[in-house]
Image 1 (cartoon, rainbow, N blue to C red):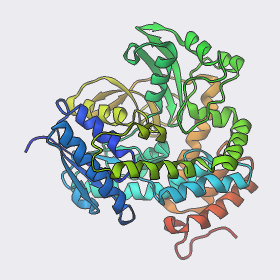
Image 2: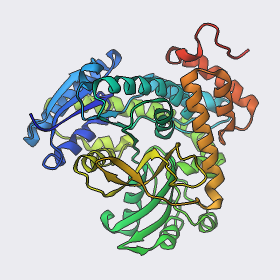
Image 3: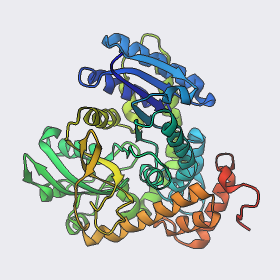
Image 4: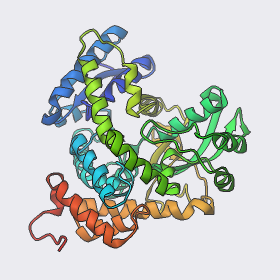
Amino acid sequence: MTGLKIAVIGGGSSYTPELVEGFIKRFEELPVRELWLVDIPEGEEKLHIVGALAERMVKKAGVPIRIHRTLDRRKALNDADFVITQIRVGRIEARIKDEKIPLKYGVIGQETNGPGGLFKGLRTIPVILDIAREMEELCPEAWLINFSNPVGMVTEAVLRYGNIRKTVGLCNVPIGMKMGVARLLGVEADRLHIDFAGLNHMVFGLDVYLDGQRITGQVLERITSGERSGVTMKNIVDLGWEPDFIKGLGLLPCPYHRYYFQTKKMLEEQKEAVKKEGTRAEVVKRLEEELFELYRDPDLDIKPPQLEKRGGAYYSDAACSLIHSIHTDKRDIQTVNVRNCGAIAGISPDSAVEVNCVITKEGPKPIAVGDLPVAVRGLVQQIKSFERVAAEAAVTGDYHKALVAMTINPLVPSDTIAKQILDEMLEAHREHLPQFFQKGRTRAR
């Protein structure tokens, strides 16, 4: 049979219908023959709910995509052409801990930044590397498309400690920013081009073009002209920006920059939100319960619009467009996480960066931007240092490396607080961090 076999690790995710919709829309150009949805035993119920919805969606669309649901990862990986990873090790309960514990110490609790991002990486990286090892054996020519957060740190780890050549980290933030600018200007998104460069959740729009004309200044003026910037995400509160700061910066910030440039305000906002509705993870847990109630409906055969509240807008566009462009050697420009290869000066050539790339059948080719503006260069390099040390700690289970990673993160105010948070979070996540609790391993005293 002709066509592609795609394995989705974490197939029971509430995001999967978004992905299925993307493959249905592109079926004529991207002939997916088999879509394997894989999950763990704890996620089996959700896997079957999502799998049944996926089957109804492809039936309604009249496309011959065969949906498989399985707990056997190796079976799904065997002879796959593309492998998509969208996992959350420890599930939503782990995210709640990632967000709650730092707040006790007056530190932002967020799933991909600061202490929460560190611990999500420590839990996720060993699992992704296990998947990469299985891919070497079962589908050595397949592409690994990783959506699992923190994408930058995970991509860094796969590039440094994995043996697979074909790997790309993917995030919906750049495409979300582009769509936000399009809405702000009232234009079609395909008329816009943005030069993106930086790291995952630390990416900047260096310049914005409309129909080939540079309009960066106009866009920056628009995002600072009101109380809200208009370029944000469902999971990040939009506090607006200080106009003179953005004017001086001269760059389009991503939504996650609020954690670094508006730290005090974001921390206070988090504390108030926790009092009113709980952490973002607890809000997401309620949203997911509502979504899965919808997914259970045997008459539902489309992606429900309520999924947009989940925060993953444009997920399918990012994933399916990347796979389509690799498969067809389209050579268009997309923003992905890849090996730097000199694209951004001042960052090691072998490190992961998030940058515009030309997408070919041989993979993404990063477009060189040279030095980042001096105003943001240091922050980007600091986060890259954090990612590299954190990835090493995740692989080795070295307590001291984890402490260094925690301390050098700009959201953590001191080594003492870093140690307190680290010790409590290690205990809280012990079940999913066996590398730190092996016999003879040096830990906190």
